[in-house]
Amino acid sequence: MPEISATSEDTRIYEWCILYPYLLGQKEEREFFKEVEDLFSEVGATMVAKDLWGRRGLAYPVKGAKEGCFVIYHFEMDPSKVREVDLALRIMKGVLRHMFLKPPKHYQILKFSEKYEQWLKERETTEEVKTREQEEKVQEQVARKAKRQAKLATERKKVKEPALEAEDLTQKIEELISDDSLHNL
Picture: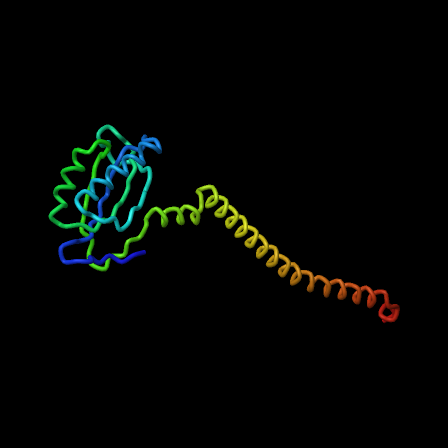
């Protein structure tokens, strides 16, 4: 993205955020953008960047609207013309709210809309998160069960080994008892 730096001493870069109703059709939206951009060109401003954020819910109703669309402009313009543009935007039809600020020098313009779209593609949906968590839980349960079974098998082997010795011992005792030479004594 471009780095902001004014080209001359009498111009500065300003960031303008404009909120407008989201119920505008494509044609009305294009006309609205053209009207806003014409306003800036009338005062000699040069557009550096335009970022359409799209439809967003509002924290509180603005002129009766609970949702609106945002557009962020970066214009290079004469500071003496800011007030003129501000007043014109206040009375412009279709502008619910607007705000401007002067970014610091060497400010990097990042397109929020592009970053947001990238984030949407990369994020997990709530269902995917639940599914993944359930799978991890099942895997953990399977691992615990396998450990328990391995432990039981080891304990059984330890128990069986003495039992085999007892059987051998019993056989030897029976052999001795059945031996006739012992009975004659």
